[in-house]
Amino acid sequence: PVSFLLAPEARPGLVPPKVSLTLPQLACRSGRTQLGDIFGELDHAFGLALKAHLERRTFLGLAARASDLPLWELLGADDGLFELQDGAFAIGVFGLADAVKFMTGKEAFADHAAFGLGVKIIEHLAQKTARESRTLGLRLILEETRSARIEEEQPRRDARLFPELKEVFRGRPEPLCYSPGVRFPPQTPLDPL
Image (tube, rainbow, N blue to C red):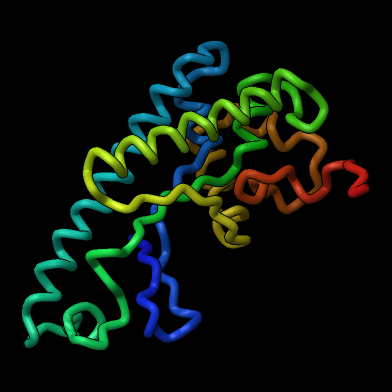
């Protein structure tokens, strides 16, 4: 799904979904020992997310031109809900701590090198977002995806495709869920002070 920043006159609370990257799944696809391959997988998945945004922008742009189509009220009317020209397209990420644990075998909060890998992954995606935004003239934003439903349902699907992901959840309470966005899992033994 595509996400736009709402036009200033838009009704508050209406935020369409974004295209999100499941970082643990990309880590599994890259292979545990091939740390360089995670960046190739990130680039591939980012390209797919970008393609989805471009196709949606084209479709919605066409729909905004025809006043007899249902989307006219949202997109084309003078008081439309979304501003297509200045809208921002969001690419979300979630499960960073889980991807890092899969790649390194260590928790990011407990190991400096694992934490550094997490930072490199997000830096890579942020640089790619900025580069593609400039190249395409499209306002892209990178943000974390925080959705309890996704964080709980996606691990079950991924565990069927990638049984080796079960190691990531060892020692965590049920139900198994991915870490929220780019944050540590909720049960992480960290002192908030």
